[in-house]
Image (cartoon, rainbow, N blue to C red; front, side, top):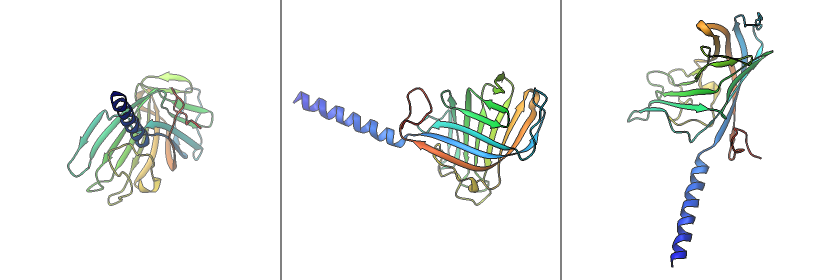
Length: 207
């Protein structure tokens, strides 16, 4: 009798874990766009306007929120913080940027009276061309216009983003210390890959 109870308990726990795993997922995002403005990097170079840019980042959808303000109608603000092995990085020409930590902030206004916003922000500085700049900034900002209901559906971390739903603007910015702009970027496409399983200790999808 005791053995049957143990078996049932193990089965129930396994079912719970499977259910949690099914709901949670690693998401890898890839954004592509072009440079719209460039400042001077530390090596004295600038990036030509319209140069292609790739931004990528990853997060786990089961991550608990660091901040949550949810209204009765489902609108509100939520913030999620991530550290390595999750990544947030940029590649343009010969220049690179990456961070050790970043925050994702969702502002779901149900598009009334304002649009929804989806923002990423570096936390703890930015490695620009492999050199840590503690006061540098690296941000991504997406905003939908009023009345567009296809942007954010909740305050949970989304697994997919429709770039055309963020129709007010889609931009990114890299700035050095002193808030000196290095890059302004227009984001044209957003693609995501959802991984059911990951390689332990990494943000890589397991085959």
